[in-house]
Amino acid sequence: MVNIRRPLVYGLAVAVGTFIGFVVLGDSSVEAGLLGAVGAFVVMFALRFFFG
Image 1 (cartoon, rainbow, N blue to C red):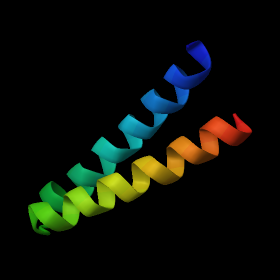
Image 2 (cartoon, one colour; image 1 turned 30 degrees about the vertical axis):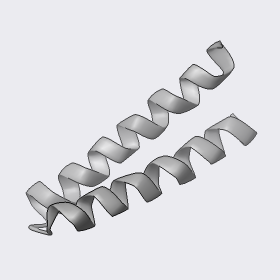
Image 3 (tube, rainbow, N blue to C red; image 1 turned 180 degrees about the vertical axis):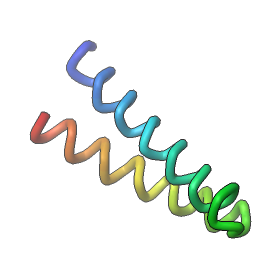
C-alpha cells in the first residue's frame, strides 16, 4: 500500500498546483484548470509509480 500511496500524494500535489496555476494565477476557466490538473496527475502518478 505504501508503494501506491507515495505516487498518489505526488500526483495530487502536482494536480493541485496545476489547478491553482491555471485558474487562480493564469486566469483560465475552471474546466481548463481541471483538465490540466487531471493530465498532470496522471502523468506524475505514472512517472512516480513506474520510476519512483
